[in-house]
Length: 213
Image (cartoon, rainbow, N blue to C red; front, side, top):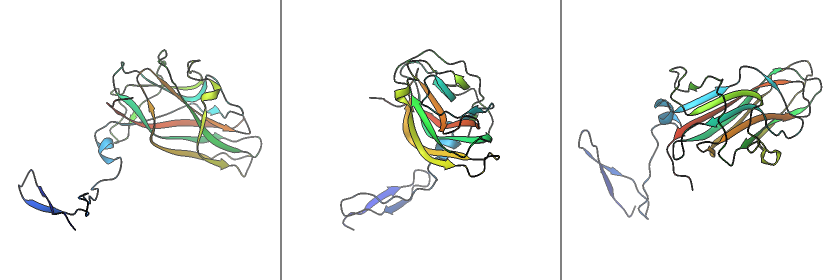
């Protein structure tokens, strides 16, 4: 190594040599899992519908299996999406394949009427300390948000193998690649070749003050 870097423990005051590359880049081993700190702080949330909705066989407009709205004022916290998912509740009439689609609103729109419980992912129960308003399926998205051209596929598809049984599970890691700004909506649907099977849809996200540009 060409560099010797030292760090000082702020509590005990002891010095420790820190490994570095020849260019001076530090080698750091994380002491926690990726979402542990944001989860511990109570700012990692989830919402899931309690009433199952049918899958779509064509791109929807304002219909969503679950819809989220960021109720923060302009300049407030953003909702950073970490994952979306869906659980199949009732069976389909034909063998088919299913996948998740989402739409992210591009303009400020009217607020949703929040009807779903927002849960903290640290196990300390439901919370009102969230900017999210979440609603169950139906024509709940604003027309500006839910234009068909905005719906985008994400994650793997699931194939059904028995007509008479439900149980397919869809899950897509987003890891912050979708951000819901203040005043914007976000919708999730299941899309497939059959519109008889029903699904409970959900979203996992965290909230953070960031600069969007």
